[in-house]
Image 1: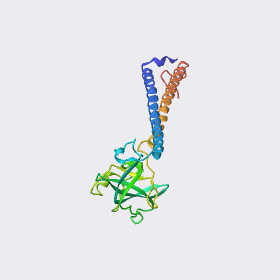
Image 2: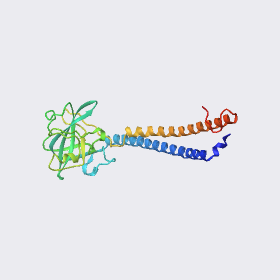
Image 3: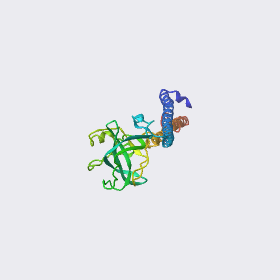
Image 4: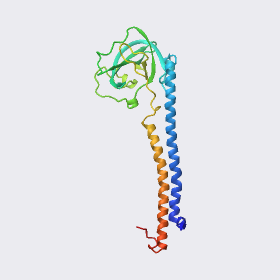
Length: 259
């Protein structure tokens, strides 16, 4: 009854099934490995963050340029505060407010380091932000890479008033001040005045974000595809066998599909 499986038409179907199943299983396994890699990256980032909080601060120059290994490490730098800017629409503890960023002109370099001195709730207003300390200061805080649009929810807010910027990045700050700016920034361990300290963020791509769960979803889809191929093959075989049996019994003509 199942000799039809050796016909040219069924040889084509069988070869397609034999190729499709391992391809689906391979793709599903690959997507699962991608998800597991992201889980491991998230675990490593969490462990590194805990270790960074306990580690002694290191000189700024020894941690540059910022990468996944140095991001979040405690850095220290000495200099004098200069221009102060506000970064609006920043959420902290479920509330919307703004960052107070002051550029620290690092001694002996002529380059400024953006320092997030703290966060305040409400609309960004210069009158709310406390003035930076005068004279030479030494800052200690978590080192961060320059922000980019879309990273950690950052958006390039357009049409901002003078004294405000949408991102903390060298590319945007060089248009505001007449000196070089480090391609990094620091968020203070202890915020100045009555402001709230801004916690360090994990490097982009090292957490359980939407892409990680997309990998997990694709894993299920590929395994479902493999199961669907097997199901359809058995269904087609069953229909073909029933059609031949009915033809032998005279219920239908040979080659005619049952209703």
